[in-house]
Length: 127
Image (cartoon, rainbow, N blue to C red; front, top):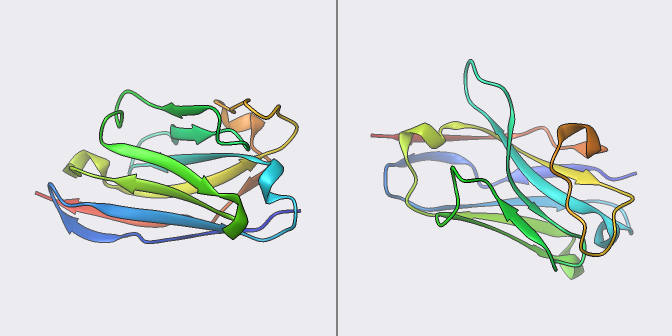
């Protein structure tokens, strides 16, 4: 079992940067593909970034491509989401999630593929 805890959210101004971190418990973190989702008020939760357990495959949604970067440090059991050029429309609760059973370069792109979820961290971007 894996427990996930996000950190790094907060209130920032448009154009600012933030780095979210997701710390995982458990010895097998390095075998879990990871993803970052977000849910804005009144909207469905969406996948914005994903990374294979090897780090060999990465996905970013069109809405964040070029501004956000997912990475992981398996030695620290942590996955990161570096966010630059934040916009008010990035305001949301951000969740990390872990998916098992994938190959070294496999990434999970649907919610159903993820087995464990964090509690979320709020990111608010003011204009």
